[in-house]
Length: 236
Image 1 (cartoon, rainbow, N blue to C red):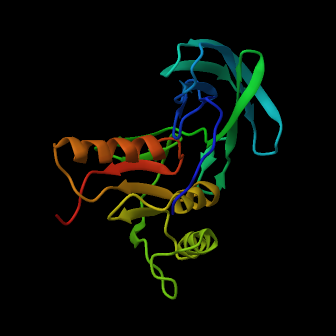
Image 2 (tube, one colour):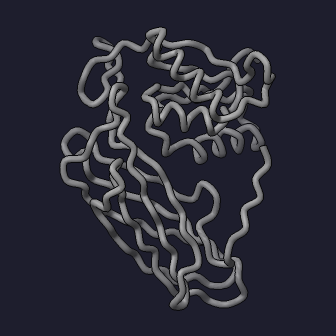
């Protein structure tokens, strides 16, 4: 798919927000690094206001940070907040929060950017395997190609969600994408429905183009709570 995004000169660039949440000792801690781009011809003075909205649509925390950008430059601000007693993202209760960012420049609101995320922490242990939110969990998954019967590779978002729901009914709790960065609609469905993901790129390598592919994949998908693994190449 091709998407055309129209923005004001001062804006959050695509994939410009990185949300980090706390571990088991501080699960409600949120740190959001936000890139700001000034594509205009004048210096921009402003601030970024961030609001965290819970699954029920209620605001539960907010933060703000100032910025000053010279013309044709890009910078970043970090917003920090704490959500008391957050609902954890789990397979049987995939609680999704939203970070709603408003960018103000020279006294006017010029951009708004929404980033879904989830509160969850996980680890891999050599003796006991995978743990999600402190509980041991066996990964039972499938290799899921992009194409689907009847539509080829032009899979609509509703069909991606249907497939994830059917896989959950079969007892799956994990998907390995293959062999390319997946349709964002698939990851969105996994976030909403509670499915873990190994996010895969096809061609490995140390050349600049290959490393850039990996960087774009991680930058695009890093906020999905469903993603727990990155696969750096397959079948080449």
